[in-house]
Every structure is written in structure tokens, then in C-alpha cells.
Image 1 (cartoon, helix red, strand yellow):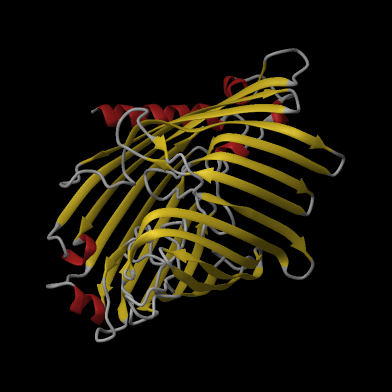
Image 2 (cartoon, rainbow, N blue to C red):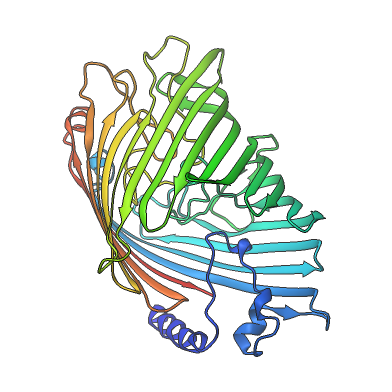
Length: 458
């Protein structure tokens, strides 16, 4: 009854908001800018999004938030490995943020988030529940503001996201988005952006304000994105990570890893592409790390045809360890990846020791209705390594005597935007086990998942 009343309230709010000027919500809510409402009619919604605290308008506050409800129905999670059977559960995420601008040089941003889980027989996963937490609280200081460039320092707890999310993603798919605590220096011109960052990770618990940092540098690096002729976009990056007790089939050791890579990408009508290559080196205990990955995503958008079909294919390669126990490590580490990029919106296979071929189709039958169909074929890259979870942790060990093919994921997803503030998404995913899973998991079963989301933002 409470949920029905809440849905009715959300729909009524949406009707009121529809009469206001619609805004585009960003994946990172702190990237939104509402100064264009300075001279608009002062509706209630406009006062929330742009509230000048003085007549000059240089000091102002902006408020926003969101609600996401998600119902998942899982059958044979982990291919029936732990006899989970049917597993239906409900996820909730609530957030509210405040953005205070003190003139053109200083800004303070804070975001409160609550993530809840109900119904899982074995309790919440680490990505499901954190009852109350400050997801973002940072300050920006504009060091330089030239005619064509800016230099900004950001310090505090913050979400970060780079590139396509293959290596560093805020991970919006899981109930808990990812954040770090640290410092970032950001330089930007019209055609170039460069970020340098140094961050510590947090240990996340399910209670109220009980998360705490590692007290050590876990993530550091630099990411540059440049607009270039012909190619459209070029990204270059270096990423360093430090993790204690990092588990691979080679063993569990302290890990220091350095990643260098580049990415070229283009979006728009016609040909689209996203091509990326990375190389990793470092230390795994007393042994050396030498790993690599290559990502290919090519598609064509027929924007002038009915339903604007986009047809594409992904083909990705992530190295695996050649031989367990030899003291060196060739397993690729996806660092902090977007969970559903490689093998489904609720993936069973992580981006380590993996080859995938992933054709896809996207349609726009109506301006506010989307349809996506994907198929992901998955193989082990190295027969000397196993299958890993989406977070990069070893799931199933592998040997050269076992098969290479992991399995096939079939995915369909539809989305309906009720208006600019409310949307509904539904997805279904079937994972047909391949010969490797059938050998590694006794009595392996195909896994099936349905996922329904109601998302409201203001």
C-alpha cells in the first residue's frame, strides 16, 4: 500500500514538473549546471534547481535527488552452483544532493544516499545495501579561469568515471555506486581535458555512516581526452592501483599495478566506433605482472531510417594467466569496471581471462521508447586460468584439460521514458552454459534473470 501511494505521488510530482522547463540529468549529478534558469520564470521547480542567495546571483544553491526501485527475479544464479534456485529480491536507492556555489571560484557539493535490499535468502551482496552514507562531499576551487581554459582543484569524497567505463566506472548498474576519497586536478579547454587524481578506496558496510577509508593510496593516475580531426576523440591515460590480498588463480598477494592505454571513439549518425588498448605491468607479491587487453566496438547508426536502428558488434580480449604457480601473473585486472559492459546487465562473467564476441541491435520505435537486443559469446582467453566475477575476483579455477567456451548470454531490454523525470526499464537475460561451465560446476544449469526498474530524478 505504501509503495502504491509513493508511485501515485511520483506521478503527480511528474505532472507538475512537466509544466516546468525540462532539464537533462547527467550520469554524474555534480556535472549539472542550472545557471540558465537565472532569468527564467520563478516556478517552484526552478527555485529548487537555482536558488540565488544574494541579488547578484553569484552565490546560489541547487538541490536535486532521485529514487530507483528495482525488482530482480533470478533463477539459478551462478549456474546453480550453490543451489540458490529461485531468488527474488527488491532493491531501493534514494539520494538527495545540495550544490552550493560561492561566486565563480568556490563550490561545495554534497550527496546523501541510502541503498536497501529486501528478499535475498542469503542476505545482501556487497553491491546491494548501505543504509545511509555520504556518497559525495567535496569542494572545488577554481585556480584559473581564462578566456579559453580553466584549472580546478577538487578535494574530498567523490564519484569518478572515465571513458566508456571499462576501467574506471561509477557503476550505476548495481544498487551501490562507487566512490573514492582524495584529490583531483582538472584542466580543460574547448578541445582538451586532463585530470590528475590520487584516491583512497572505502570499505563499505551495510549500516548507517559506518564506511571508512583504507588510509592508503589505492588509485592514482591521469586521464586526457582530446578532440581531434577525422577520429573525433582520442583518450590517453595512466592508472595505478594498490590492493592488498588480491585474489587470482596464481594466488593471493599484495598487488601494485600500472596501466597505460589509449582509446579512439566516435559517436553520431553513420559509423560509430570505440577502440581501446591497454597494457599492464607491476608486482604481484614478489612476482611480475605483464597483462593486456584490447576492446573493439564498431556499429552503424541509421539515423535517417524509421526507428533509427543501430547495428553493431563488440569483440574484446583480456589476458589470462599462462600457468598457475610460476610466480608471475598475466591476468588482466579491469580495475573498477562498469559491471554490465562485457557480458550482460547483470553479468555472470568478469573482464579477466576473457574473449567475448557481442553483436547487438538498438531501436527507437518511439521518441520515448527504446529496445535493445544483445548476444554475448564468452570464452576463456587462457586455458591456464579460470573464470572471474565482475569485480575481478576469481570465481571458478581452470585447467588446460577443461574446455575453453564459457557460455552464451542472450539479453533483451526495453525502456520507456514517461517524461524527463520518470522512466521505466525492463530487461531479461538468459545465460546458456557452455562446456567449461558444465565441467566446472556439478549439475550446472542455465541462469535466467528478469530486471524491472522505476527511476525518478529531479
